[in-house]
Image (cartoon, rainbow, N blue to C red; front, side, top):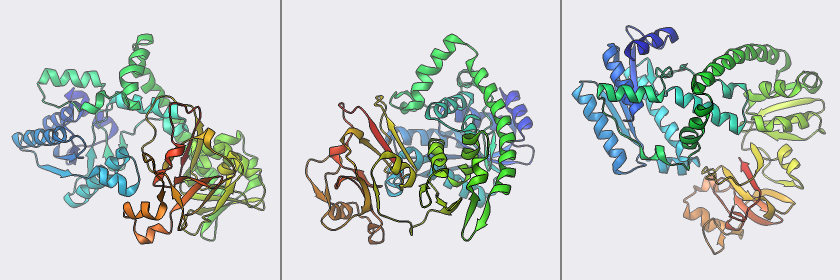
Length: 438
């Protein structure tokens, strides 16, 4: 394992003599084996541990073990405890996204303050295949199928060559201590279902499926580089500065073949998701004045041109829609889709609303909240004034005026970015789910 580790790092130019590496160690088997390999390699390094305060005593036990191992081996040790739930609530993002933000922000600050060259994380070959399958099932462009990068900015992944089974066997052989994260066995998470059910079934059909998919990702990564060069050249030809934004001629865009792949790759830099590609195609053939909002930009059809501007607080805050198509084309939503219930947990982010679509009545409207507006917050049986709801959440006065409501035939369905109305929640009787993202 050690020789493969050093050779992989050499081939991928991850580190070498004179490098200073910050090694991220959670206490799990992958990161503890990585820490052991760095110690044996002679590369100068320190250990960093994040305690996300999500598993109580179990999280504290992880921290104590990693700290003890670092001390026993005379390795400089950094640790930080985070209020992950609080960060998720304040940023209105999922707990997983909050943990990722906190982790990499802290790693970045350590790299700058302590002079490290890179931070090493312990993703392995199985993690890479799982990410590929998750992206494949969700729907993605070519880049989403190229796998994790061995070297991405300041982050390196020196264990991508090894399977989870190889790493675990090596830990047992070398008697490397590690701890099991109890959440890794919880089947409510998509990644765990793929890990414990989907991939084992695939291995029954093809025992070499991990290597096969890894090889496919390498081929797709090479193809992606070719596409990126082509799209970069096209972008220089088609897009030109226009005031504070960018513009492109619709005529030139509609001449591209094949159309949809070109449009997705060209506008991906402006926040277009793969799910929005068909909506972007419709925008190219729509009337002047129609527009599409991505997660980062507003794309406007204006007399034969697409005008691209960053989304800002000055955007229109009132909308009225008579159909889903209108919501897709001109709404403030970065993503909109209809799904059937699968038994999977609904998205936890406050930026995503999952509503019972068959309870929605058009016209649907979006507007700022007004004094006297009421709704029934998810999980509650009584109506509550929006003003009182925002006070309870301690929403700053400067933010209250920006809060928008999604209404169905005049009835509040969602205090956007905060909470849905309990009357529109997904239940066992739900047949179709309307999933909206802002």
